[in-house]
Image 1 (cartoon, helix red, strand yellow):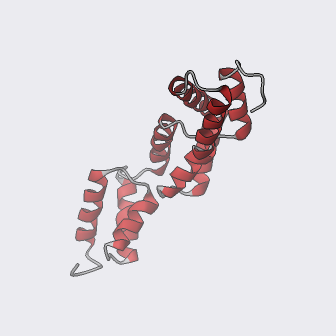
Image 2 (cartoon, helix red, strand yellow):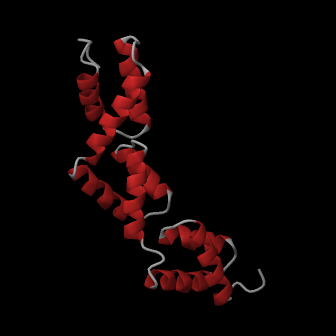
Length: 161
């Protein structure tokens, strides 16, 4: 890069990055400073992208939450992924809390359980439950919710999960 203060070049780099994929404010800022642009130049560019509606953390958070739910993630898993993608923790927590209030993570856990139940049909009930516990833990589901799902989907076994 010739000039780290070149606003036009920074704006073009930002547009190229946003053309490839939507990004939250923090992630765009980090990518542009990583390319060598001066922090003041990047801040102005990111602010302008927000003014134009090309960067909208709220919209990105809601969209990314849908992606997380499609992967059957739980509350902790969605929060972890959203902050990893560069969303501010407070925004990610608020969006996740709203989804939890609407029961979306319960639906996600049951969908995960149904998928696992289909794949493990015919196996020992304890093995099926262990696999559900393992998958639910990796995906960030609440243990009490996984217990409920296991009880509902694997009711053929009278053992505790």
